[in-house]
Image 1 (cartoon, protein in one colour):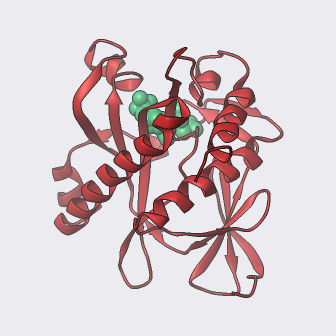
Image 2 (image 1 turned 90 degrees about the vertical axis):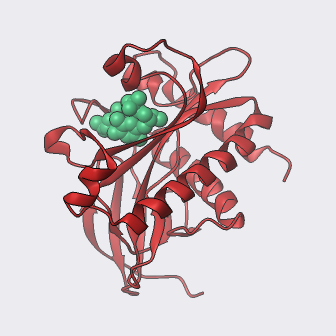
Amino acid sequence: MSKPIQGEMMYEGKAKRLYATDDPNLTIMEYKDSFTAFNGEKRAEMTGKGRLNNAISAEIFEYIKENGVPLHFVEKLDELRQLAVRVKILPLEVVVRNITTGSIVKRLGVEEGKRLPRPLLEFYYKDDALGDPIVTEDHALLFGWATEADLAEIKKITLRVNELLQKLFEPLGIVLVDFKLEFGKDRDGRLILADEISPDTCRFWDSSTGDRLDKDRFRKDLGNVLGAYEEIWRRLSGRKK
Ligand code: TMP
Ligand code: ASP
């Protein structure tokens, strides 16, 4: 495939910029060096973060694509950029939890660090002004954010991605605690996985030390934030394929 020509910026998010290309069906995602947490209240810039998330996310996308998950990711272009199929993002954040921590502990007062008997799936309405509130499937249906068929497909893909990610990370000594996915529709209306999968959007715990190897190091001021991202990249890129 000939290399796409980058066009104008279409959207700037907290962690990425999206650009048009000369192909209306494709977009370029550029990973930024910014960290944000708590709906953008806490911010920092760290040189190297964009490069690490691009590398990690591309490696994970390649692996799940090989395993048949429908995906917007096409290829990693360079240090900061990925080529992806242009999609219309559904306004839902889909969270899977294997172990209790984070907002579920705060919201429900359940014990921290407990492995759940099966993966717990949650939906959040993607709206910064509202602080991404948790919603039920019925909210998504009745307010037109997704159809019954979309929700069934989202659940199927999300649970499959959870299985694949655990299979990928377990041999690397990393526990997949929880993560967030976003979905979009391509020009034919097909539902596909979108956005990114990185230490920004997953919680990774070292299986022997319990060390946090993800954005919680930034959220909770644990220090050595980029060191944790580098460690994830070191283990992922060093694995035997
Ligand atoms: P939570 O415990 O804060 O709800 O987070 C659950 C998972 O979702 C965790 O892996 C981090 C990820 N996440 C995002 O990717 N973006 C967000 O805006 C939030 C709140 C969480
Ligand atoms: N992604 C959200 C923000 O940037 C929240 C988080 O990940 O903690 O504000």
